[in-house]
View 1 (cartoon, rainbow, N blue to C red):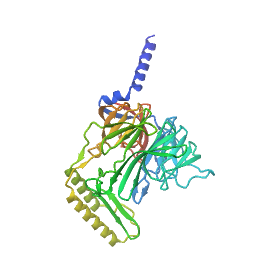
View 2 (cartoon, helix red, strand yellow):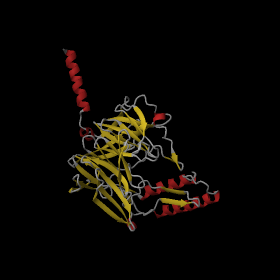
View 3 (cartoon, rainbow, N blue to C red):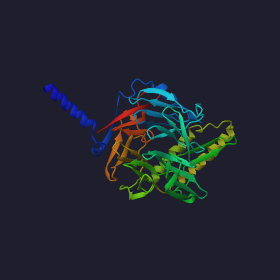
View 4 (spheres, one colour):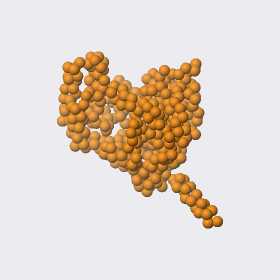
Length: 425
């Protein structure tokens, strides 16, 4: 009898631990992400993520992978710039690589990332350069193509046979960010929010910290030295999520939070209740000086092809002169957006993450918003075993846990892992 009672108590304890509301964990302070060592056990990660060390123009590309969780808890991983996807079972076991096939059963020559699932049975992809958005079933069989005539920053599924999209276009005299609702059944589209920014008003520093040089052979150098450059418009697009049958549009640059119906009618307007940070003049100068020293001691960070050594020297000198000139022009703080990204947890809370003030600190401050729209607490996420990449394309909640594509700190070979985190204090 005592054994039965003890087992019952242990069972109740386990149920309370795994059934604990995420909000209760956030309110206790720092949130620790603990890897589930059984998830994905036995996978040969060097084979599963064999494209991790891909490069393009000498720039690493293999880490630009993302994940999508399927209705049964399986996971699909996108391999950017590769023509296939990887499927994992609900326990994290690698199952197979697959690709999408067209109407004649032949594989598509080029595939973009799977962005989400609609109707619990269909994948849809990021639009390609021509605006084609492929839709196919879970076996990769082609279903239809949706057409968008703009660039896309984010897409999420809505529970009414629609897809919400954050898009952008470049106009003659302005940049335009907007949010649209796309009907899956007939491709009809409705813009529910937009913001035009005159090109002459794109931030305090304009194009400061961005460098470009094109060689005679068409190859080019293009890079930025300020990771937090916050020009208005394209650099701070809206973030969208669906919570309790409402579409939430959050604007990083202004801190506004707009609530819409799933058909696009505005319900409420509000604003964040914290003060966004800034990048001080001293911090900017330190970043720029470090970038200058790094550039002096590194080769040009692209494949310059057949460019001559004399032409490369000219490019080096021109870029370094511009970088030094920009260093002397730093005179004002740069305002940071109110938040860097938003992730919805499995209890329908929205997590607004700030920009980390210290590089490589691996600690991420976050403000928690309940599904009723009320901000209730501030917390932070940390992890001892992994270098966290806080991004909704690499970190997805399901049943109180987080599934992520993250970098394991202490390992040999490919460090990328598909990992399941338990959320604890």
